[in-house]
Image (cartoon, rainbow, N blue to C red; front, top):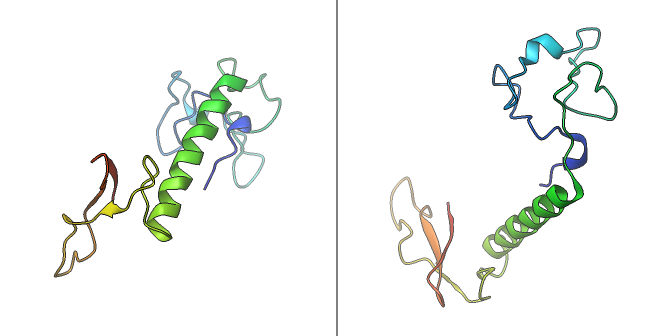
Amino acid sequence: MSRNAKIVCKHFNGIMNDACSAGVNYLSVRDVRFKPYRYPCWGEGRDDICPKRVMPSEADLAVWHEQDARADAIVKAMLGGKLSPCCKAKLDESRVVKKGALRGRGPRYCSKCGKLVCIV
């Protein structure tokens, strides 16, 4: 699932935290006139509420889209053909738990280059 990076401030780290990475307290900038609350971290405009708001550049967006594409390739490999995204080789599942409550969990490696693909 890709997030829409164009509308999220670069300093946003989740409202489960007290403050963003720029040090702005989320409670001090939220707009309580609306339910659910609105924050200047999202959406267009609203620079007047938070002077430290910085929207991502086109280069940042390109990096995020590349990361999303890489994650999508890993998910497709795990769900579909079970091929590694690096070499398009079969996944080595020899270290996956075979019995018990954790059956099917464990690391998957590329059988060709040995890189860790994912841990389930």
